[in-house]
Length: 145
Ligand SMILES: CC(C)(COP(=O)(O)OP(=O)(O)OC[C@H]1O[C@@H](n2cnc3c(N)ncnc32)[C@H](O)[C@@H]1OP(=O)(O)O)[C@@H](O)C(=O)NCCC(=O)NCCS
Image 1: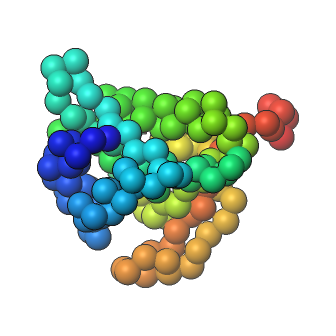
Image 2: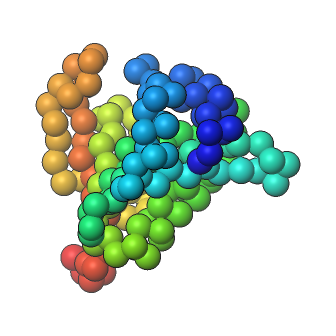
């Protein structure tokens, strides 16, 4: 993610979340030593989505991910999350965590498909009283676990 991406990123962000991140939020992620914000670009150069990952030592966290509403369902979200898993693993991550609204079926289905598991809930975590599901992807689990 670069500064010139931010107009489009902020447009997608405001279409995707009731409490969207601000320009300052994204700039802070771009400056942060443990921030790894990335964008998905279509072959025609259009910015289709983005993902903000934070990593401290062996723990990574997906802080924000969204795809342009007109381009959803084309596996761009999946590509972004798979990219985050691969890059955090290369930097030595053992786990990747995230929080998701209990009612966000599309996102939960995507995370489950990729191997994230629910590890807990935060009751009434969001403004509207909705619970958050905490999910985690663990790299070194054997298939039986
Ligand atoms: C969540 C989000 C990023 C997914 O992006 P996307 O590009 O549409 O997702 P994909 O096309 O990669 O779909 C991947 C998987 O998600 C699930 N999925 C996607 N759209 C779905 C839908 N409409 N209904 C149910 N599941 C759906 C499917 O399991 C799909 O698996 P498949 O590839 O095997 O079919 C996108 O919906 C989005 O931007 N939502 C708003 C922001 C948001 O909620 N972010 C997550 C916050 S935790």
